[in-house]
Length: 282
Image 1: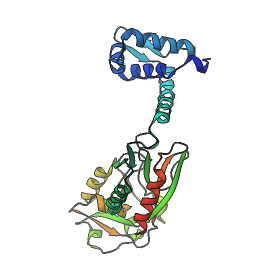
Image 2: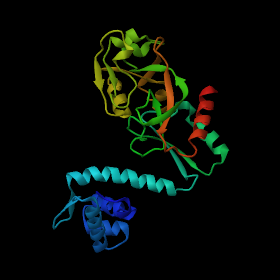
Image 3: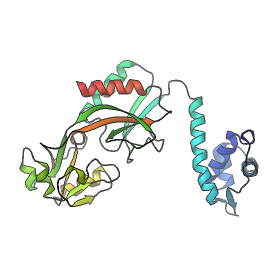
Image 4: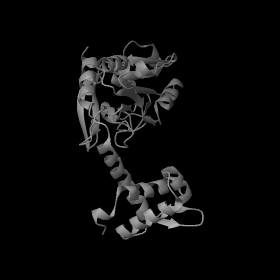
């Protein structure tokens, strides 16, 4: 088993570059070093670990099964190390959202953030991930409508009403308000991975149609074959002339949460929670 002193960050970076680039030559170019250095460094890592990480061929290198497993742990370790070396106030705070950010409140959040003059850019972006990209380390904070998985810290910042998304030519498209019972009479489009609607909302079985992302969900509803249930923020961000968002009078409100990796919070996460809560309270 490798001693900690035998493995350095440079060993991990060389191996990860090789996995990414697939050849020693391209890995050396990516790292700004020589092919021989990359090869020697990866060999040193393999000796320290006591097992082979890559299969070497004339065309390049392919990770072994053990190498693929080690690459995931190595990438996480390198990311944590680089996090330790960051400036106390990073240049950007990335907020990922599976669906619609903060809806109509997004502009107010941006304005309040700018007024604080933190020197850190705020970026609210859509990410097709159940955690808004937080678990995959593509985002610092996620906007979640529902309880986050284990391993994430979170804070409730507000609530939102639910609406029924329906094509204007659909029978429910002419209604001013609908009930969950009305919705249950039709097929309901949703996304099992990132959506907030499931059978527990209804008092009887419903037909469901699984969709891939927000645009596919809206396209499916627009055709008139099914309806959808979503947070009010979706109506603000994804307005379409052929789709109406009709209030549902008896649907429970959704809790909106900000979530982040436990023990690895962006330094300005607390400020963001404060700003978003104020936007929802206004």
